[in-house]
Length: 470
Ligand code: ARG
Image 1: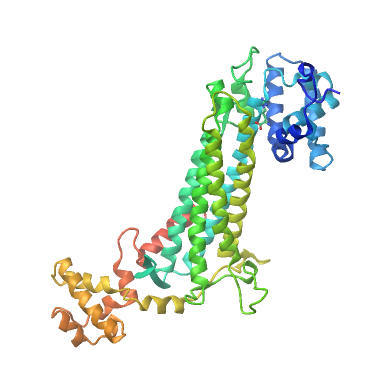
Image 2 (image 1 turned 180 degrees about the horizontal axis):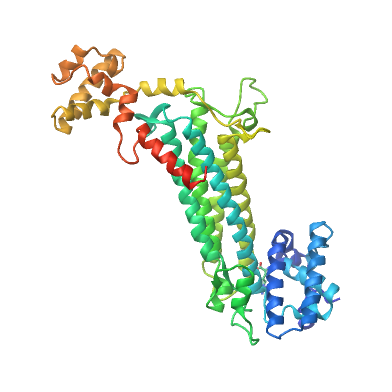
């Protein structure tokens, strides 16, 4: 039996081990919709160009409709022997449509077919990821909107640095995720280009109308070089790089959620459904979801390394190496989508029957405030206060270092030192110093664009709300 399209040349059948080794159908079958869409666009163009008859075109359309139903119903007989999604669908089409099915591959190769399929599939996944990134940003902006006046210590080196608004802190992640979204949109422009018509590598002898196929498939243009069109997977690498960066942002946020949830911080709680217990320690509620997201980031970054290494060293044009692009790409998409979805819900909550969101993170403003009051978070404010009284900044810095040293020795905050003691460090210090040393005073004073003053934070929230149609 001739199982493969090229059997006539072969003296013996492929060994079972080689079949298993080379077959991709059990993972690339998820490209089936893209494969059928690409084939239908190709067939439409072949008919319009008079390369196949209208009757053959109609037979191909009918056959593909049947195949779509079969796949959707789980009744399609995927065969390892037919190697990949393309040959499986084509073989079934030929069963259903006879010679018309055999004419579909005119002017086409699996090389330009698979490159087209992956691009079409990835384009729609990027659009889903774009939507999920919007949802996650919305969740963060909503929580930020409720927490503009909530103050927590900002850290550098994980040492208390200066007080910041919790909203401001969350909006930092909104910035990161909005850049991730831009990167996805930008990558999409290079994904959404049509290889079909490149054929195996050199183009084809048939008078194809590639622009027509691109229009039918909603693509922004056609690959301008057939060798490049069938062989480069830079679009997939670029997407995976953007996905890796996005996961890195999620991972940083995860790390913070984990720290904030720890007993020593106690800044937030997340809903129980995102935590797990311990089989031995009855008191435990562990932050498994953020921990797993942090862990899965390694997996996605690994896929980036896998894909970029896969490309390196491949001579032009197509090589079977490229079949290895699929599993890392699929897993990157699956991991990123699941992660974004779960984070949007874990942070922002889920709409109940009345459309009100519930079950997002719970903020312990008191614990945050207490932490901000420790660690001399307003020491810089005292220095700035002295600068306003005329001291050069470097002198002010030194003066405050002495004051902090004294406060540390007494185990009190700067604001707990009596005025007379503070004046001992510099005579310019007056009663109004206590405004500067307060957490609110510290925040309000940072009223520069992008700063943590509530007025600035509200401006940013309004900008994001408009941008995200909230
Ligand atoms: N399954 C193959 C892939 O994913 C399709 C292209 C095969 N082309 C070939 N000449 N062997 O890359």
